[in-house]
Picture 1: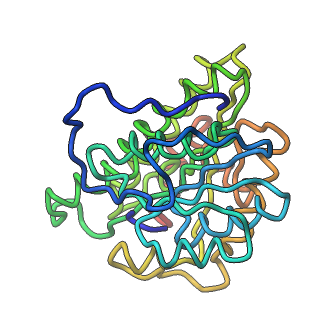
Picture 2: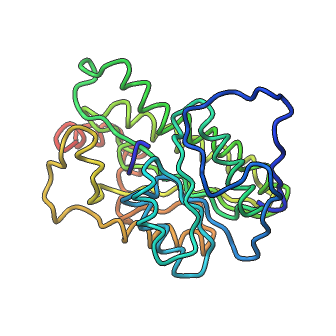
Length: 285
């Protein structure tokens, strides 16, 4: 992963001097022309430059969805989009206006977003006391804050349409709390609580929330977080496996999905036998 509705038109800001942002502006989308009307189902996938996001985009493309692909690396986004009708929307979600600009551009491009797959994220591995304050902010900004702001921007169009689904990408770290990944664990645990609370708020609107919890995945994420995966390679999931789970969860309107399914066990043990859970975590976590 990189560090990186219906009928909603893009209305240019009334303020003649809009807020400045460092987020890249998609070159393929005019800010002033009328919004396009797309009849096919539309999925906006963030973190689509590589890893789970790219694999998820390809899986949705196989079923004929119109894709909007976002990430910081235009070249990699174009590689993901190759052979499809996907529209590339480079954006830096960590920038102050990044989520708002991406949502507006996406809705302006297609006139609707049926599914948002929030796959952008980053990690940091090492003792918490050694973690620079700037990196604490970066992880929380991208993994938690930016996701919440993007969902906030996309949801009104879904609610107005009476349909849609938000897919949030969690992690086993958010379920068990991994040593030397304290901030990343906190961010993913926050997403889990957000997903549950938002799901309750959206009851009766036609809009659903899916929370996907994968184990360790074979992507460049582990290198970028500052420490390669220290388990055996055989224990890593493929991005395609996670993408398939995301696809099935959306197709079946599921609230949660764990990859692999046994990842539901730690949470159950924690609730039923917290003492045993902590002993196991101290030994294996």
